[in-house]
Image (tube, rainbow, N blue to C red):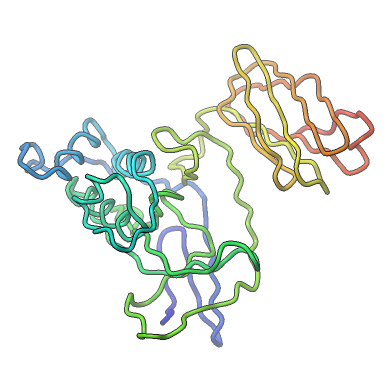
Length: 300
């Protein structure tokens, strides 16, 4: 069963049998302070508790403490769909592998041991495209911020938010033999990586706590083209990004000058110089007529 639901950054509405999800990636803007609970100081024999103590050491905000715990999970726990393997927090921690249920349970256990209220969420992921990743049941988590309320996270995918094809179910009870399903009618995805997320795996996208960027970013967009690569080079810096859908983003850029080389199937475009003026979000756009003509494109 699907029921309307909303928290900080997620809103699910149901009208005439159609569910619509909207996610918001504006900065979380949580200022809630954090202090580890007194009882956490003992070593004890609980490995989950000991790990939680280590991860949140010296964290002074709840956002920081949550980020350290989920960052560790994203780096150290690998996804492994083995229905026969136990998914308890201790066994997942010993194995360093789990499927979504075990990942959620370990994350909730670590957060709880650190004195941060969290809970599992039963849900359904609607496939992005026909013939792509199939729609499926899924579990993620919800974390409590005293000044912002409940906030979704999927520890191995997204921190402090979830994509709009995550459909929260009103109950984790599924009718035996029943076929749950749904058709994704439309998805408008305006999410673009613009900053680094320290402490997590490279595949994680996170909702920042404030608008200030940690470093500069450069987005390269080649309209009407699919495939190709872009290479950005500067003093002591070289990074390559795949333009899988005509665009790609370079992160972690310091102020200075760079050279950009864009290679597209059957044609080459060179932008000889890019100047980054600081911790800013910048972009270079190649219109269709520019491609193949050797022009440098437009920057913004």
